[in-house]
Each structure stands twice: as structure tokens, then as C-alpha cells.
Image (cartoon, rainbow, N blue to C red; front, side, top):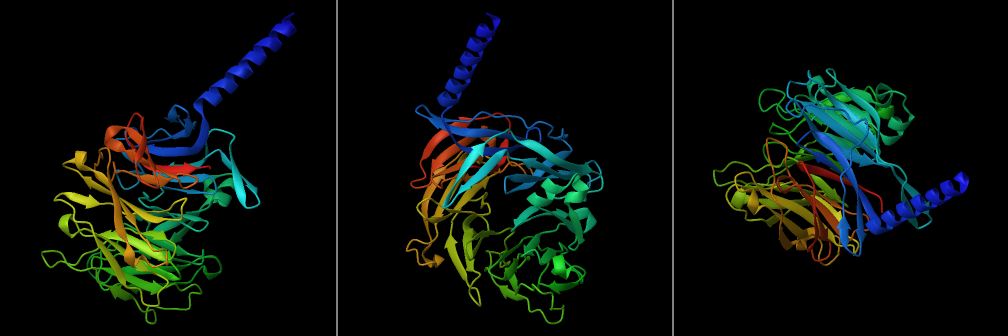
Length: 446
């Protein structure tokens, strides 16, 4: 009798779980978002059924407890199902800074020309490296298989990968530190063979300095090059070139993969981005890549523009699109996407600290005739969005292209929500309420 009763209860429980799962609908993606309200990373499976879209926020077990008044989450990168998230503090890294590695719990199963994705387990913390000796990282990059953290207060950078994290028993074993860069460091790593690390100095002999650091078989080799102006903030690589953002315009060099160059032989080339109404040179501060093109914004308010260079050109030239923003508005770094219909687009959030209710998302169609040249770029749509919650470097919107390329998810920090947009006409398909202050966003699955 007891055995029969147990069997009946078990069957009913199974049916209940199955019914609940079916009621929630199919999973489109697993989303991770930073919550600036309490300095935590949260996650939820974005689901869709006949009633619409659904997203329930969940905690990550063993995620470190941080003090949001003293510590903050900075940039994060995903690679092969792994997330690496930087931790920054308000006292030069002495309170507790470093990084956290999290398994997404999403598994890819390749099937010839396509893959299936399994959401087999909830996310879990793999390694935590937070103490007073991590150099207070502010930037986290992904280049190929490398995830690179700038250790500003140690004048160097740390490299990890999904493989090194999974194979290591301790976080120390997963990471390698390299000297290079100074102050507030930005980085580019090319083919895991050479790194370019910037100095923030605006004056003296170190203004415009970039340390070129050998990696792998090039380890131990190092030299420095200089841009014509300093206050460097921004670096990336594309098509065998490395690009930098000094106080005046854009600089670039050919990547020295074999470390055969020197301070005397490497030629640093310069592109002007124009001037503002006070005759001051325009600059940028961060880059995005799409195929062979490097995208960035320059200028403020009425001088704002989207800029593109084709890194595959022997001598890259500038293509511009005027944005014509209002006073007090600024355009964030472009978020580049290739949609399900092979359209190449750039998403630019327009934000205002004083008037966040005017925030919007500009969608730029980059290659309308699909000839691989972005000279025909054009604003396709401008979508009103929720409010930002900008305080210092935090509280900005973010966007990701969802698996399959048919939808985009965005965060609205000031409105406590995630929205789902169509990637074809950019209409808002769902407004999903959350708590806290959702900001940076990642997506896994398919």
C-alpha cells in the first residue's frame, strides 16, 4: 500500500513539474544581468509561450557578498559557457577587488551543421579571486580564447580562459599576470601572441605610451610605442591592426605578432576625428568590432557621430554618421550585431543624466546593399527606452542579440526592467519587470 501510494505521489509530482515547465514555455536564452543596487549578478531563463515572454530572476549560489557602497561590478565577458566578472572597489583595491568566474550551466551539443543547447543546471561559481592584492580592475576584455583583466594599481594585466578556469584547482592556477600599461589601463591582445597595454598619462614622457608585451612563445619580449597625444583610453584589434584612443583622434599600428619591432621601427599612424565648436580635437573612448570594421562614437550633443573604419584596408579611412543629439545627451559605445537575416546593425543608447526619460536606442543599418562596405550606413530606427540610472561609470543601459538572431534584449536600469525587441522592425515585444538596477547583460544558449 505504502509503495503504491509513493508511486502515485511520484507520478503526480512528475506531472506537476512537467506541466509547470510546459506552462512557462520554451527557453529562448539564459540571461545574466548585473544589479547595481546590491552589486550582485542575477540570472533567469527567458521563456516564451502563448501568453508571451517570461523572465524570473534567480540568485547565483555562492556569489560573493559585496558592499555596494564600497565595491562595484565592472565589465564582464562570456566565453564557451563561462563568465568572468570584474570587481572594483573605492579605495585603490585595498577593500577587495578582483574577479569571479561563473559556469553558465548552458551546454552546447553540436549536431553537424547546427547545435542544440541544454539548460542542464543552474549557474555556479567556479572560482573567486577577491582580496587586497588584485590591482582594482576596471576593464575586462575578450580576445579570442583569452579573457583579459586590467590590474590598474599593479600596472599590468591578468589573462584567464574558460579552459584555464575549468582545469585549475585554485584561481591562482587559472590566471597569469603580465606587466604592462599604467594607471587606468586599456588593452588589446592579438592571437594570444602579443598584448598592447595603454598608459593614461596626459603629459610628460609617458603621454601616449603603449607597452607592447610578448605572450606565449614571445614571453619576455617587450618595448614601448607612443601616440602623438596622451590620455589614452580605448584599445582593440581587428584584421591584423591594433587601434587606440588618445585625446586627439584615432591611432593604429600593424600588430607585431612575432615581436620583431622596436620603439624606433614601429610606425604609429593617426586619423583625425575632427574638432568641436571650441576647436578641440574629438576623441573616442571605446570600440566595437563587426567583421573587419571597427566602430566607435565621438563628440557630444550636436557634435555626436558614429564612426567606422575598415581595418582590412591598407590605409583605413573614416566613415561618419551624424547623430545630432540634444544638449546633455551622449551616445554610448556601439553594440554591433548580425541578425538572423544577415543584417549588420549597430545599437547605440542615447542617454541623459539630467533627463533620463528622454533615453532612446538608435539602430543603424551598417551595410544596406550588403557589399561589405559600410559607406551606406543609415539610421533605421530610433526606439524610446526606459530610464538610465547613471552614477559615475554605473547605471547604463545594455543590449544583447538573443540566440537565433531574431530578438534583442535590453536593460533599463532606472525602470527596473528588461525589454525584448524584434531585430527586424525593432518593435518592443515585451517589457519584463525586475527588481534592483539591471545594467550589463549577457546571453547564453539557443
